[in-house]
Image 1 (cartoon, rainbow, N blue to C red):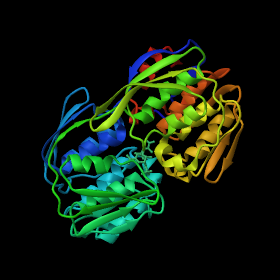
Image 2 (image 1 turned 90 degrees about the horizontal axis):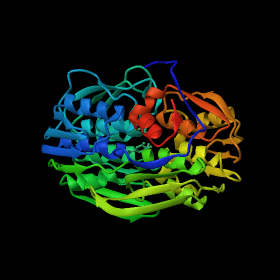
Image 3 (image 1 turned 180 degrees about the horizontal axis):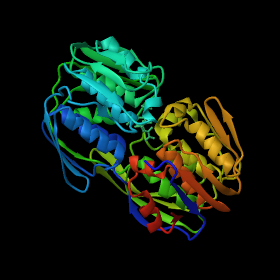
Image 4 (image 1 turned 135 degrees about the vertical axis):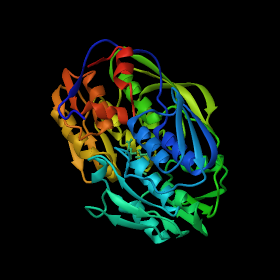
Length: 437
Ligand SMILES: O=C(O)C1=C[C@@H](OP(=O)(O)O)[C@@H](O)[C@H](O)C1
Ligand SMILES: C=C(OP(=O)(O)O)C(=O)O
């Protein structure tokens, strides 16, 4: 990693063109992990080849599966029907999803492993997953600091759990369900709000029986222990969280029109698009179809006069990764955009509320910070700053979009982190006409 390299964007030509969204990151992690746990061959098409996913691919291989790259986005995983102790420490890089889901999967087997990650992942809380997994019978040792990586895990001989989540988290839910596959008895997870349901959908596709019923505003999910997975074919749809960046650029740069093809429209992932439309964004959805069991469409965004709104708090789970780019577009809106009920943003790759507040302020945008939210005042954006990203890909891409219609260029630190979720971002944006370099 080059600590001092920067990337800049500036106002220039209008953005025009058609691009494809990279493969969905959540589904890509799950394809590899479920494929590695299963018996037989899993063929994946459209896998995101970002750094987070490549770390998960290496991990699954270290746990005993045969993992092969056949071509662009095409991967073959030959699972051995279980994980075994890896020879070395598993480095999950920057990926919270990778480490938390792998922890759940590994906890179900009689193995020991040390899990670690990069400087950003080492700062993120792990007890939200190790706590309930320990209640199921897994043993954890913190190697240097409590609640943080690196940690040692001894898995096996688990019992099912009835777990009511305080905050809806798909990572926690998924970890418990993956562990529950190899536990004695049923595992039940209750969520206060619905979180992304890719694990539930994919467990069914890999042959597991899973029962999902609505409870309040969330779900009660029940999975019987002692179930085997069978390899299958996975077509990974385009990632709405990545599609958001070129679409946002079209919304804020006058005269622009950009289409992103093949974007997944799972309703638990599309809160940003609903919010933009509430703000007056010109978005059209065409060529709706099913791909890999998910609704998919091509989305066209045209430059729009956005109006600030109060974002409904009950949308948070369906757009939790999208608040940074929402904030960048809100900076160009007329009137304030109020984002609340998003304390979870503070424990992502960075404290995303603090970094968006600092970055936007450095670019001349008025922002008010709250404990669990922030308010962005709309208006012209001055730019002319180098923004700290703390190795967070979404903070970097959001500020690069901001720079595309700021009075002066905007630069971001650590731009190489963009490849964790969106390899080829700079080339794709340049292909649309954006001044990024
Ligand atoms: O399950 C997943 O694939 C993810 C769940 C979310 O995290 P939480 O479960 O912590 O909300 C999200 O922020 C992350 O990018 C991906
Ligand atoms: C939070 C994110 O990912 P993860 O938790 O997997 O690091 C993200 O991609 O925005």
